[in-house]
Image (cartoon, rainbow over all chains, first blue to last red):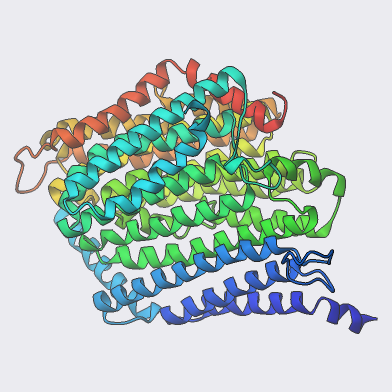
Length: 133
Length: 492
């Protein structure tokens, strides 16, 4: 019975696993490209969620054939097509930003970028404080 | 023509955006963007007048009947937000022409206006739409173009790139959370139309999938509106974006997200939803209070004044969320009034700072020294905007705080009324730092007047003037806010 429930909700288990994997990658990785990959995995889990909910057991593709049939719900599939486009645009923009960051800082490791910024900002504030005296 | 105003509101900027790419001279692109923005402003005024006279307008895209097709629905609650977005855009563009010319290289300027128009489209679209998934699509249109706009600040400071990257990661997580929530709602109700959702959710009753959907939507929108402690993307994005972009984003972007939160909480889930009360009382209200104090305190210690105002924005968003967490007509009025009023005050303040950045190349507290004599008009605008931010009578800030305190007292929560007033004192401290540097300290070295050009001063003073105007005569704004609050609570 438990196994049946598990298999019946198999898609949703995969969704949760992918979602957590993606989020964990975004949070834990310092490499900016790997963060984008994590973000991609995270978004992919949502695609699966939408596609799974549109499936009707025994349903076919919703194409008019003249005879009555059980169709899967095409709407979530169409919706997720839009979300896929959004995902592609986000990835492209994110990677373009990483290229710019690489050019400006010479690194794509988050902690090194952060260190470079801190050093500069610390230098700046120290400068203004000196002016004040 | 009149019947098609709701769609024209969104389609005109949407069509103009790709056209702007083909304008090889940036002046042409600017004219296109400006006149499109003027048209959007005129349409939003017409829509607001019609809504106040005759009630909600429903527009069916392609004439597909409502629950199946996409519906654009304008009522008092979103008509006022449309007015804020298109109005601020119309004031920002004349400012942007000079400010952007100084900050972005000329071959990229027409691209800037393309992104700007896309951002405007996205913000207007997510506010006007009556369809939950359509709101996500517009949310992403505005977000993606915002990331580009923020990154354009890289000419002045390379940290704009990392700020934009952080915003992209957090913004995408927020938007994805939102779309997960919408998906779960669709799973339970089989509809995406907001009005239809509002009908179908109550009969389902206490259901775990709905609670999860609710949680995902509130968290996702919390990220987009920079609800403390989900605000980490905001300070750097505002501090390092080009000046005109900061003005536009600070005055509009988070407002659209606040509107979506209002819409989902009050119209779609409704006050009867079983986790509604606890979420407002035990989650949103404490976080709003924390935002008011924590963000204001951090603002006091900022060296960069642009970032100081960004932290102040997080505190001000706290006031908006506090207002809605009372779930009363007065509380919602406070939220909607503050949406409008904060757009005016932060718009004016960031414009004044943009003028300083243009003249002096930066806006740290060191740059402010002696500026009262060097840029008298700019600093006078900053001081007036600052007074409004504090909530001095005769400015719009006072009107917002008045209704917030009234809502707190009405709910019998007098300690919260005290906290609202106390947190205003923190605003006095961080605004005073700038005033002290500008008027009481001498600038070192160069003390020649470097007043900003009229092209920057006029838009700045339009917004600052509006601060005073709507502070003295708030009858128009309170009337609209009252109508909007009643629509959201479903009592009008």
